[in-house]
Image: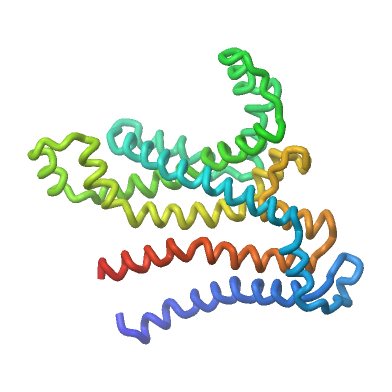
Length: 286
């Protein structure tokens, strides 16, 4: 395909995506430079960088950022590891493979709020998991500042692991059979084949899943909103949840837009190492 044809087919999509991404960001930057509440929407007051200074000096903002980072550190590696484990199991299954994949994808395709409500009911008082935890460990589980953050992480793993499983399962189907046969002839165990052949082959997919998972985890909102029920005693506020509170609960629309801009910049900074790795892999393959 020549350059003209490529531009003709790809250009409209690129233009639309840039419009959808750039215009809201520019609007947030402009709004973040004004003092805006629900009372002065028609006459916003120019305050310059004061909103950004207020956000950076807000202890609750840093607390929500800390919780978000801890959430990413806890959830993302577990998604990848469990996704690889289930992909390996799925690779060994031939009968009912489609049924297993369909069942695994249910939480991934379910409406987030509905799925979170079902998840909470399972662990809430009288739920099936609450009952079995009490029976097996003689422990009556209550929603508090310890259990709710743990449930938020578990819910993220429950909903996002199927994505990692499907991606890694597809990658396992492209393993070089010649290398595997040579390893078997040399007497390599299954674990050695996994460590020296499969995992290096799936390296680019691990980076891809990490990229998507970090972006997804950075903007987690639905599960926090439902599991905490907007109760501050659980001490489980993410960046997006606190942004929502600043905008709608506190009515500080200008500050909320400034926080959104800082959030986008934070995501970009976090993703730079993964983007560099992806770029290097593409250069090596070409």
